[in-house]
Image 1 (tube, rainbow, N blue to C red):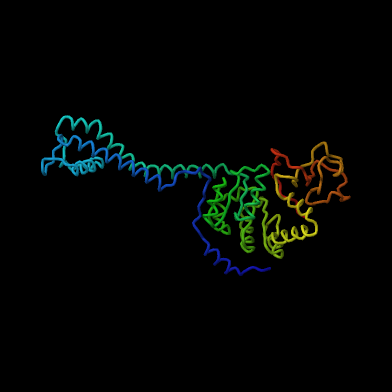
Image 2: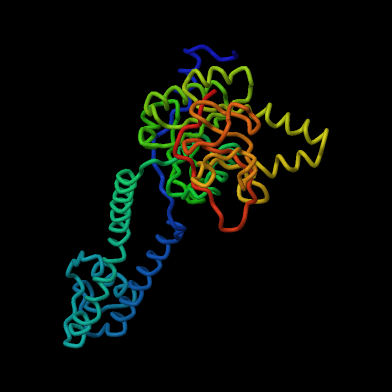
Length: 365
């Protein structure tokens, strides 16, 4: 077993500690800089329009300093008026100028304030809306799937699960990289930024209420710590983990993983099979690509199949799950199928046909 010491792991976790933050999928909106720039431009246009209106009727205004209002004075008056400062050094004295202030300048002043205050109000409103969405998301999230690590393995794993009918709203991605979480939310998944070896990060992903947990970290020692933490928080969830080194697989199972996939060995076996028989390699690759060609699925035994042998069913049965045992299709111990059995079958994937994800943990040998 090649694992660093406990102190080294703790130091590594501290180094990668980031702010724990939940990000929910959202629609693409205009860039904030563009929104602010647009508001500033509108405010400047309102200011310019006010200054032009005042200058057009400058004879109706009085300046206490020189008794006349020029173009600069018009801009000055527009600025202090729209900002509600109002020094009173330049005042409308004619009836026309006062009517213009009532029916034109005052609405422009209100519009100017709305533009300036609107940005702040929008930020506060967006924060309130986001908090409401987050609270609602937490209260409704049940029996979901948590994916720790959204690299090539994690992304492929969740795409396969979603191909069986799992909704993207039922997936939560955990990763220490904010860019990775942004990519996950862009695809419609909820995300949690943080180190998954820490229980508070997994709690933000509602791991204690999850049905399935997929651990696809880049390091085997990290996978062990995540598995231990996740199993401590959720005793009933199905945990599937990926490791690079085959010798680390037993430790993952001891840590609480229901199934462990050795990514390097699996890829190597597929390469070897493809060398021996390219056609067989293509078939195996087709089987693990859910939703196209041939799919390998788990389903319960239906009443019409009770009392039959595995080869007598309409589907191509590979194995039979009976209790805690996985029996080959030709195992004499099977006898005939029972209603409590489950079948691992190979079926032809057709458009629009989806198999609901299994709610039960995989039986152990």
